[in-house]
Each structure stands twice: as structure tokens, then as C-alpha cells.
Image 1 (cartoon, rainbow, N blue to C red):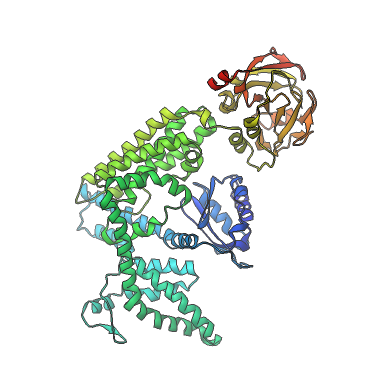
Image 2 (cartoon, rainbow, N blue to C red):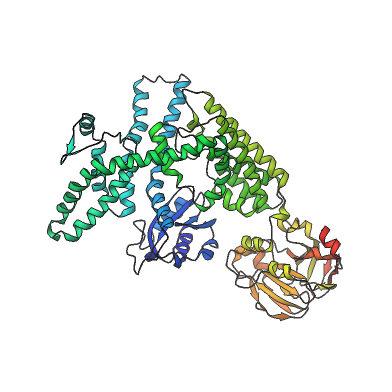
Amino acid sequence: MDYDKTAAAILDQVGGASNVGALEHCSTRLRFTLVDGGKADVDALKKIPGVMGVVSAGQLQVVIGNNVVEVYQALRKLPGLTGGGAAAASGPKAKRSWGAVLVDFIVGVFQPLIPAIAGAGVLKSLLLLVSSLGWMSTKSDTYVVLSSIADATFFFLPLMVAGTTATKLGVNRLVAIAACAPLVLPSLTALIKEPGLSVFGIPITNVPYNSQVFPSLLIVLFLAVMERFWTRVSPKPIRIFFVPMMSLLITVPVGLVALGPLGYNLGLVFTGAILWVFSTFGWVATMLLAMALPFLVSLGMHKPFLPYAINQYSTTGAEPLYLPASLAHNIAESGTMFGVAVRTKNGDVRSTAVSAGISALFGITEPALYGVTIQNKRALWSVLIGAGLGGAYVGLTHVSGFAVVGPGLASMSMFIDPTNPMNIVNAFIGFGIAFVASLAASLLFWKDSDSASVEAIQERTAPQAHSAPQASETAAAATDVADSELVSPLTGTVIPLSQVPDAVFAGGALGDGVAIVPSVGVVHAPADATVVTVFESKHAITLRADSGAEILIHVGLDTVKLQGAPFEPLVVNDQHVTAGEPLLKVDLEAIKQAGYDITTPVVVLNSARYGLTPLADAEVEAGGALLALTVKGEADVALS
């Protein structure tokens, strides 16, 4: 992948640098906050090489996969995006629903916390592992120092939340951290524990703020109001000290007296509501959440679980619902992908499935979701079966997670519970159930014929947008089929389609036909027909014969990568042609020198309607008899 070209194309299709209010990334996605969401061309974004999918849910999310960091860095180098957002956004901001604003805010505040929390959490679980195996004493100096890394991360979580919230709101980050620092200042918290401490005569509630997230969030929201107000009314020569001084002077007392306790109680209510659902429905809740995650993750709607998971874990040290459900879903995606890789005859699908299966095995599911699962109902059903069974088991056995990180093979130590050794055992059993069940389901259910279409192969071989109707669309509507004969579009050697070294064509996923190894570089019309699509990459043409046959002529294999250089179209979309009329000039030697196979499949896309009889021997001249098409009866079509 050319990261710079991909980044430039993405920026262009989201409306340019001036339309980007903020840019972040997670493990697989670029997350844009746009000034005007209407300027983003979602369809064009999906066509960019390297883009796996696009989700518009609060933020515009462009799914890149494992190369997201490189593409993000390439974007950051583009003019206007050096700081992660547009240098200046011009024009009025488009109105967004409150739901979109809320999701955007939640993701912006909590997503940046994940690396620190995940790193600290997994480190602590690994320390538990080495101590339980007797490799290190919990009383040793080394253990105490290493353990303090994780402990400090969660103790000072309110300050990290203050920083991410300030970044999201455009508030001075250091002032925001200063406003929340009194919440965990040891000398002040010790005094608050003593009865009678007050500010301006108002008593301060004794609240344990360490490891909390909601108090800091509310305090920085209030600080943003104060900072904007004092900036507006303050004389410019004294703003540098007057604005932060007045903002802190008001915000800190209000935070200690009102906003801090309010945020703490909101966190308790929010977390309690989710835990009530879990305690009421038990393992059913875990199972249903695991089965819902393919849809939630594909839409980016799993992020609202982050505040709950972070608050629950930072408060109690364990999380019993979201993390176990995520384990079941992640591993079910992996099992499904490996099953698809075994069953498919499509080389592209196999390579995608293997790569996505490995990623999902380690907790990253977007490549699997966007590459295979969401596009194919048989794969989706396999994931749901594995996730449901795995989720039911980890729910029944009360598995809890002890680190907020994407569950996967490398992070299984997150399920170590020193007080309950069976927790990690049951987590591994749930892992195995999800993997085996989804693998078995995909081996049983997967069919290439249900997952391939003309449109899909065109997207695979020609990522550009096509304005003309696709052949598959017209084929579905074709009812006026008739017995007919196709003449050869090329001079060359005829071979069976099954011998083509491309699994999509050889497996008949697109339809039946033959292939020709051409000796002359001119493609002719195989029948009186209308040109449906001349690919923008010029390497293929689809036609609808007057008899109703839908025909694809694909010159060479993987020749889309040549970007049209060896091809010269002689016709345009919607043009009517007669049998034998030249359609395309091809420089066969240039294709060979570039290292590509010149074998040209000639496929009848709606071949289920016909019986095909080859009419040519090994050698054929352009215009010579190639295939006889005999219309099948309705019963024959139904059985095909």
C-alpha cells in the first residue's frame, strides 16, 4: 500500500483539511470529526485502495486495518492536519443529532485512554501470573516497583481523563489537569476525611476519586465554560494569568462541592444499571452481548461500553460482562475465518480470511468483519453461533476480565484471578468453544456460490466507482433469453474455464463459459449486443446480448493492476454493437512483459438460464463459432 496516496485520497473524499475538526485513530480505524459530514463521499471512500470499510456513527470512521498507524501518520503530514485536525475550519458547522454528538464525545474522551489502561492492566495480570507460578515474590522490590506502574496508572486516572476531555473540548490541557488534581492530592484528601472541612461554608463530601472517570469529565466541562467566559471578558494584556486563575478559582471549589460527588454518583448509577442487567439476566446477557458485537463493532457502537468498562474495572478491579462477551466474539470471528479459508476456492477470499483470522485471534476483529463477515450471511451465522455458545459458557461460569484490553490469545492473562484459579481456566474453555463452534459452522455452511457476485468481483478487480449499470443488475432482470450462439471475441487457443489459474473464474463463481489464450490483440463482440460496462481500468467489458445472455470478457488475469496502460477501448457504455465488431485493442506483449497472464475468460454471467455447448476446437479465429446457448426450462433453472 502507498500510504501517502491513500492518505491524500482519504483527505480529499472527507472534504479536505478544512472540513476536518479532529482526527484520531484506534487499532484499525481512522476517526474523523467533520465540520460538515455532508461533504464526505462515503461511496468514494470505500473505493480507495487500502480502505476496508466506512462507518458513519457520530464520527466518520474509515476502517484501514493493521496499516492504520501508517496511514494516520501520512495524514498528519498533509497540509492543515499537522496537529491532528484542520488548522482552520471555515464555513458554518453542519447540525448533528445529539446522539451523534454524544458518541463522538465519548469516543474522543475514552478511546485515547485505552493504550495506557490496557498496558497497565495486562502488565498487572502478567505479574499475577509470574507470582502465582512462584517465579517472583509479591514482597520483592522488583515486584513492588513493577506493580506500582499499573497502580499509578489507575490511581491517577482522573488526571488522564482531564487531559483527554480537555483535548476534545479544546480547553487548555494543563489547566484542566490542574483543576482535577485536588481530587487526588494526598494532603487535601486526608483533610476531607476529617468531618467539617468546607469551602465558603459549604461542606465537602468525602469521595474516593482515585480511579474514577466521571468526576473529572464534569469538572472539565464546567472549566470549558469558565475558560471561554473569562477569555471573552478579560483584558488581553493579562489573559495569560487572569483566565486560568479565575477559571481555577471557581472550577475547583465547584468541583469539590458539587461536580465531583455528582460525577461519582453518576458513575455508580451508570455502572449499576449495566450490572443490574447482568445480574438479572445472567449468562443470557453475556451471550446476547457477544452475539450483538459483530453488529455493534461494525457500526462503531461498541465504544459507549468503554466508560462502563473503565469505571467498573478501575473501581473493583474486575469486569464481568463486556470483556468476557468480547472474548467470545473475537475468537468466533477467528474460527469462522479459518473455516472460510479451508472451504473457499477463491484465492482472494482465502488470503483475506487467513490474515483476518490471525488478527481476530489476537483481539482485532475489524479485518474479519469488513473483509468477510458482514458481506456474507453464512459467515455471519457462523460467528453468531460461536459467539453465542462461547458467550453462554463464560457467562454461566462467571468469567471476569482483569484488564481493559481487547481479549485474544496474547492477552489471556487478563483473566487471571488470584482468588479464583478457575476464572482463567473457564476463559480458555470459552475460547475453545467459540473457536471450535464457529470453525465447524463455517466448514458446514460456507459456499462460494452464495458469497460471490459480478458486482463483488468488479469491486475486487476494479476499485474505481462505476457509473454504468453492472451486468449482474441487468442479468437479474433479463427475461427475454433465447437460444443463441456466441462467436469468439479473440483469435487464439480455447481452454476450459476450469483450467484458468484464478479460483473465481475456475470455480464458476461468476458463471460458466470458456477461456481463450489470445494470439491477436483485438477483442470483438461475441454477439449482437449492448455494451453494459467498459471498466475504467479498460481490462474488461460486460455486454448484454440481444438474446438476453450476459457476457463478461476479462482480458488477462489481475490486469486491473496495469491501470489501463495496455488497453484501448473502441466502444463506450450503452453502445449497441454487432457480432464481430471490434471492442478493444490490447497490447498483449506489454501485458506479458509486465508479468501478467493473458488468459482471457469469456463468461456467461447468467449461465444458469442456459445449457452451454462448446463449438470450437483448440484453436479458434475471431468471429468463429465458440459457444451454443440453449435456454433451459423453468424446472431446469430452478435446479441449477
